[in-house]
Every structure is written in C-alpha cells, then in structure tokens.
Length: 249
Ligand SMILES: NC(=O)c1ccc[n+]([C@@H]2O[C@H](COP(=O)([O-])OP(=O)(O)OC[C@H]3O[C@@H](n4cnc5c(N)ncnc54)[C@H](OP(=O)(O)O)[C@@H]3O)[C@@H](O)[C@H]2O)c1
Image (cartoon, rainbow, N blue to C red):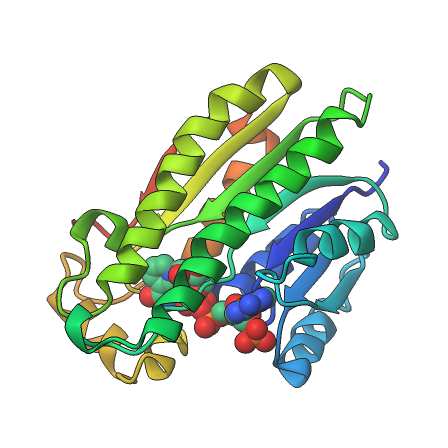
C-alpha cells in the first residue's frame, strides 16, 4: 500500500507527539511541524524510528504569512498529503482579561485560530486540484474551553477555540463533496507542559482531581481520538466536535 502524508502541527511534544506516533504507526509518513524546540522535535521523530513510515521534523512558525505554503510544500516532498491535523496551540499566561498583554492575546489568536484557518484554506486549494479519488481529512484540535469560556484563566484562548469549532462545522459541508472530511477533537484538561507555560504547572492535576473521572487525560487518550477520526473507521463522521473530556463540561 502506498504511504500517504499526514501533516501534524505542534507535533514535537504533548498531544501532538502522540498523534505523530499513532499516525506513523498507522502507515502515514508524517511531517512534524514545530516552531522552536529542535531537540524535542528530533526526539519525537527518533521515537518513531521503528515504524516503516517516515517522520520528518519541519521547523516553521505556522502563523507566519508564508507558513501554510511552506508546510504543504515541504509535505509534498514526502508524497501525497491526505491528512492535516491542526494541533499546535498556546494559551498565553493565565490571568483575567483586563490584565492580559495585547501581544500575547494576538499571538494566541494567530496560532490557534488564524493559522488553523489558513492551513485549512491551503489544504482546500491543493486538494480540490489534486484530481484523484483519495479520501482526505482535516482534524482540528479544539478545547473544552470553547464551551466553558475559561473565565479567570484565558478567555481569549477560549474565544479562539470557539472559532476553531465554528470553522470545523462550517467547512465540513463545504469540503464533503470533494471527499474531504473535517472534524475536531475537543480535549479536556490533559497532562502536558502547556500548563507550566501558562504559569500553573500543577493545573492539570488540580483540575483533573475535580473532574468526573478524578484525573486529567493523558496525551495519548486525546491522540487516540484523532487517530480514529483520521481512520477509515470514521468514514461517515464529518463536522463532528468530539469531546474527549472524561465527562467534564
Ligand atoms: N493540554 C491541555 O490540557 C489541552 C486541553 C485542551 C486543548 N488542548 C489543545 O491541544 C493542542 C496541543 O496542546 P498541548 O497541551 O500538547 O501543548 P504543548 O505541549 O505546549 O505543545 C504545543 C505544540 O505546538 C507547537 N507550536 C507552538 N506554537 C507554534 C507555532 N507558532 N508554529 C508551529 N508550532 C507551534 C509547539 O512546538 P514549539 O514550541 O517548538 O513551537 C508544540 O509542539 C493545543 O491546540 C491545545 O490548545 C490542550
């Protein structure tokens, strides 16, 4: 079977690193996109070395004006891209809105929402012209915050993720006639370093302890949902926002 290419943004650590490994194990060559952590990206790619499929790190700031074109251009060197996973995300520092820094807010919107829209647009432009019958799909990684609004933590991030949900719902019927499915996974609190970067290293454990299942998600539990949405098992799933929150609302 010919290997196809999956692009995974934010693939160097956390949830993205597990998505990269699962998609490589499922037989996709993977372009692992990250913007800063060279050593992390290399280590994640090396952990996939036992798989037959190739995992290639690509350093690129996805919110740069030429980011989407560079990402898809690089992916085309590996083969035919059939999967785009928009996973890269940042929250900014935890605070009330009134205390938040304008540049931080802009960066959060740029990376979580604008870059996701632009990467989806690039996928649509290239895939509509592909002229083959390959099934293709986009999975956006949203957040439970889109529904809670994340008061007192990062309402701007929640707003960006609500935009990702709307993008997913709207693009799915637009893309469906071309054999392209568009879905989202909406994780609840998950044990990654995103919380330390937001200024609260113990956040996942604290929130997890108060959640219905009494613990946060592992990155692999979120990645499993992404892998399923990409797979042919989900061939009639389109426009879905799949909550993986352990029952938290
Ligand atoms: N962890 C949670 O509790 C949780 C809950 C709900 C939703 N989510 C969502 O899940 C996704 C993954 O989160 P995570 O917790 O795994 O985060 P993480 O561990 O902080 O990883 C973020 C990834 O995004 C990459 N990245 C950041 N900015 C980038 C940019 N401008 N261009 C390219 N790559 C960039 C990072 O690599 P570099 O630093 O090298 O750029 C890294 O690979 C995010 O969309 C997040 O919003 C997480």
